[in-house]
Length: 444
Image (cartoon, rainbow, N blue to C red):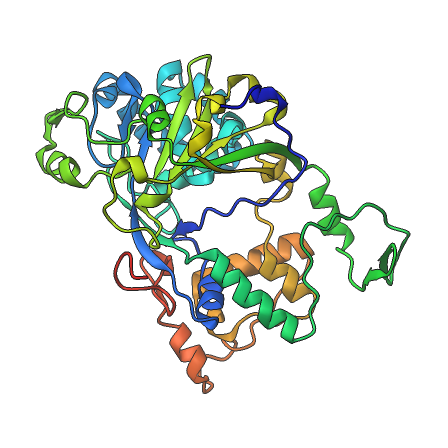
């Protein structure tokens, strides 16, 4: 155990890569294609979650006593989502904490169900109370990208989410790095920009000899100004005792319920008895239940791990959020030092209302196109993805991206373009079924 948790230094901040994403997110195909280009593939997985502990425990696999206790509020939330969707513009900037007070939801329901439901998907952590209520509404009501769609009036969420898991990033990034170096690209790690000695319309220069010929346009620079960041730490460990103390990791018959509002839950209980293995866990701090601690059970979803491993040998990634404000709540000092694999500090975008007001999404594809790259021909035939890209490109860059390959649908298309037209499946083309995704889980 660390002698003093508050003395842990964070001199080196890194980027945390969890390595998974939702199959219904339309920004994923470029990443899938890129991995496939270097001989890697992604694997499908069905997302299982665990939120709370004991009497506040719930999940998306089987019903628990918490849902029974808040049955009326669950039904009311499903009803409240309808006017929020109808008057969506009015709820664009109203935070969840305010909206739930306006509709008189209890504090326990808000902290134990509503906030974790949002944080589990958006990854907003301790900023979740400030997230616009519209985001939760979209997660529950959008047939194209709503991860909790359709909602249940009895359990709110009762289905396993289709997700994809990326390959071993060490091998992938090293292969990518070697390819870039072979083409004359200089790849730098642990390099910090400390001074800009020249900045004008032609570019910028930094000491002693590195320069860039492109600068973000004024519109994009202004969109970054309101953003704020927090310092978080991820502890990768195999301390199963810590996990048992702070999270619900298994099916618990004493907390499960066989009927919910008269609806039989036997089939769900039967499945969960032998197959409940949560991949994403959340706990609320007892001192402040609006604040969250998140943990990934990586062994339960990363394909490089064997499918069945004793819980004592599992690997976990516990994330402690917002050092400056919430460090006093952290319980990371309880992790056994001899079970810690590594500690990584990272600098994360703080999801306050200004993030959604001024940025919404920072698209790497839009930035690349603005610098002269061409939007992929095959993806232009993925209608929903192309629509999202064009709308963002217009908002972020103030430019309209014109169709190139789908302008005249009668013209002869290339083989790649024809293939791209069949990749988008599901409602409005919201589920990607293109190359680079394995057909079965845990294909290594």
